[in-house]
Length: 113
Length: 120
Figure 1: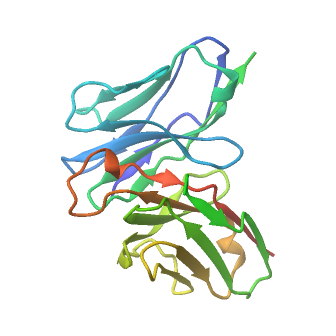
Figure 2: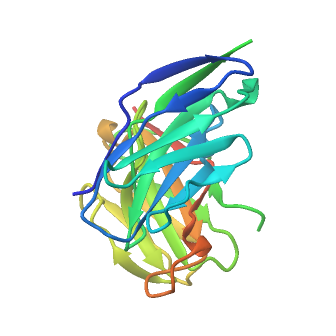
C-alpha cells in the first residue's frame, strides 16, 4: 500500500524567512503525481504545488518550490519569504493511477511576526 | 460553479441517526472523490466516482456508508446508524479528468470546504 510520511508535526518560521517541510513516500508505481496542499483553519484544502514523477525539473510556484528526489522518494516543500498568510496545516499527498490521493499526517506551520 | 461546495457545513447527529452529506462538484468535472478527515489527521480516501459510476469504494469503513452520484454531477454520502467514531470532517473533491483519460493538469483535485459531522 502507498504511504506518505511527514515527520515534522509542527514547524515555525519567522516572517520573511525560509522554511522547508519534509515528506517521504513509498509507491510501487512508476507513473505518479505528488502534491502539497494547504489547509487553513477554514478547512478548505488548497493546492499549493504539484510534481509529475517523470519530470526531472523541480516544480516552482512563486514563493513555493519543491525538492523532488525520486530515488530517495523524498518530496520537500520550500517556502521562501514566509508570510503570515502561510500559516496553516500542510499536507503532502501522492496519487497513483486510479486517482485517489494518499495523504501524510500533516505539518502545522506557524509564522511569527 | 466557481468551486466545489458542500452542505451542510456542520452536522450534529445523535448516535443511531442517519445522515446525508451533499457535494456539488465543479461543473463539468468527471471525477468525484470523498475523503474522511479525523481530527488532527490527514484525509483518508473513501470512494471515487467517474461520472455516475462508482469505480472504487474500497475506503468505505463499513456497510453503513453509502455514496451515490446518480446523474454524474451532485453526490451524496449517506451514513446510516451513525456511531461516535464516524465523527470527522468529510471532504469532497472533484477533478476534470478520469481513468483512461490522458493524464495531465486535469488530474488535480479541487476540494470543497468539508462537512464537520459530530455524533453525540
